[in-house]
Image 1 (cartoon, one colour):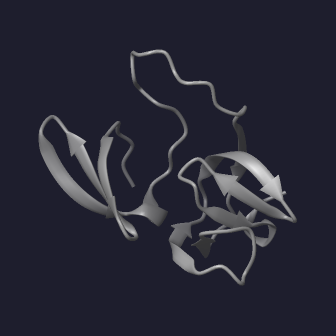
Image 2: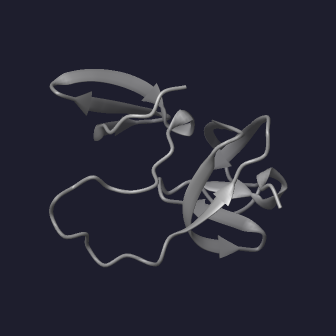
Length: 106
């Protein structure tokens, strides 16, 4: 796994088109971890971000807080991600998708 800063140019379903120095590459949204923006512009007012560690394995990320919402992709475990909200045992990630508490390492 690599660590690098990319700009998200476009979201297409469960794919994000990333741009680094003019080179664009598609990635699965669930494989991305957005912890902070590298923008030099002042960040807009957003809710406070906290982080959670994802357990080993592959976990569904969903469009809403619950298993009744459609899966929008998967996230691999072993990473720390930022979240901005919790609801009924679900965490809303900075990419707008939700992950269940079963995926969270305590």
